Length: 199
Ligand code: SF4
Image (cartoon, rainbow, N blue to C red; front, top):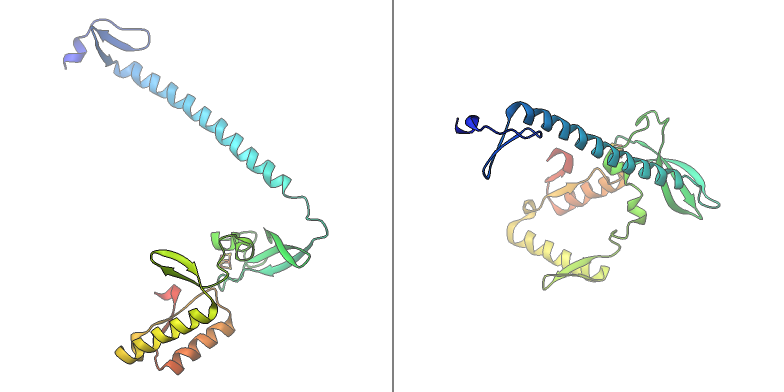
């Protein structure tokens, strides 16, 4: 290799000649290990700071909401039934914790359950029907939504028959909602009913 013939070697392990720079494989490896160790140490320090600040934030949040009470409940996102300890203030769910001693979840939640409180408090939660008009999502009334959707459904059944529709259930719905969902499909005239987890 042409680069092995280079004569000068700098203390940093980099051989130089003229304007060309070539790495000495042995020293370069050592330098690389040093740099890696330093980078890991710095990353570790940064990570520790991040985790500590998160822990501090978590500790700061431990203070109870004034006049609140703890209510033991279960996550309704699926049939597993993990335990949630809800903090309720004046009838409003204000914070959730994992129920550490729950016999089903044993102190753990999946990501859906960990954010279960967002069903109540998230600013992104949908509170009314929306329709995309000229590419923009717009709030519409429940009456308008019901009228437009039912007209569209009837149009589909008229044109392609009742089996042109599929009724897709959800792990989120309650037993009663699942019953009504199945009933609706039966009255509609189709057996195309299934659950989202099976698809
Ligand atoms: S936390 Fe996850 S696994 Fe547990 S009940 Fe809720 S959705 Fe199901």
